[in-house]
Amino acid sequence: MAEPLAQAVAAEAQTPAPVATTTAATAEPVATTTTTTAAAAATTAEPTAAQLHPVEEQEHQIIVDEVSISAWVEGQEAHTMPERDFNNDALADFDDEAFDSGSSAGGSAFTSITSSVLRGEVAEGGRTYAVYGKEEYGLPMDDTELNRLDMSHAKYYGLIEKKRFLAPIGDSPQKILDLGCGTGIWCIDVADEYPSAEVIGVDIAPTQPEWVPPNCRFELDDMEEPWMWSKNSFDLIFLRDLIYCIRDWPKLIDQCYTHVKPGGWVEFQGITAILGSDDNTVPPGGALEQFTENLIVSSRMFGTPIDDPIRWKGWFEERGFVDINLKIFKLPINTWPKDTRMKVLGAWEMENLLSGMEVMTMRVFVKALGWTEEEVLVFLVNVRKEVKDRGIHAWWPYYVITARRPEEGETA
Image (cartoon, rainbow, N blue to C red):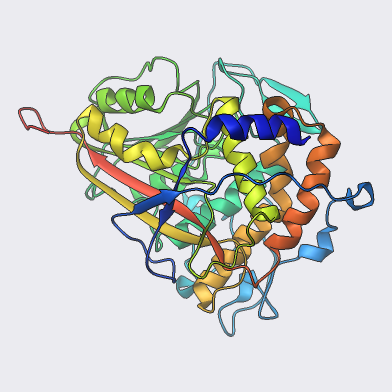
């Protein structure tokens, strides 16, 4: 198992990946970053075959100071995360203090979703993947993954301070595009919040709800192919958390520039798999460090570098965007923070990792690194242990970049 990784790491050593760093320990956003060279990848330590079986579900039930995450506000009644249901909020119904998702999709008038392309899917490793589009996508499209995406929607909303996006588009936008819309929950929330706007979501998998608000619609398409939408037409083009998806970011940014209105905004959000820690509590050469290094190397070999958000700003500048603003938020990987809000966000991310790391790694580790499925499962045993270790004060850098297309006659 270690040979493909060692070869890949040796090749990557010529261009080591930078690590985003920030100064605050409370996950507050910063507008600028500095970079340092990532440590060389350590050799992969394999647990015994007896450790193969993943952690049982009850072993990683999320608890925050003995209170379930849906009841972390004092006095709030505890309840569990509901199943995905777009006639109700798809997320736990937190109050305002608990960064309620704000979705009111259940109270909207709805119209039927339409699609001219039949559903396409393939089973692989016990999971279901989309087959629409020219390239392979690294994550599945089944119900388990869709539920994880809905949880992530609430997580990111809380992380960026109860905002759907940061671009200053005004109160009455006319047209908004969501690239890689997934379950469609962001589109539905934004359509409810901005009734003046036509909100379009596009994805390679038809996994959106059957009924949607009247100003919201979904299309099945590959965003990396030439766009059929009108040029100069969108007030906002939005993209979030598209790991293992984009193979040519400069081309995508060019299409965004062409199709956003002069004066309109483009916003990208995404995590890089470059662990940060303000107190150096991530064990050097440990399972977590190996996990992130393997993610970076395998994603590059797969053609979709997971560390590309560190390059977004330069690509936006090269294309001629102006008013470029980059903020980096710290997302804790477990419940180590003392701050209640950050502890809850860490609880969500810990659940995301414990329940989702197998699917984050299986397809790309097998196809890019040449591992077997059993080798992937063995490797993840110790990763899960470190994810649950509250003595490891680690966080992911969450990049949010906004950029404006210049008005006609305005120089970049």
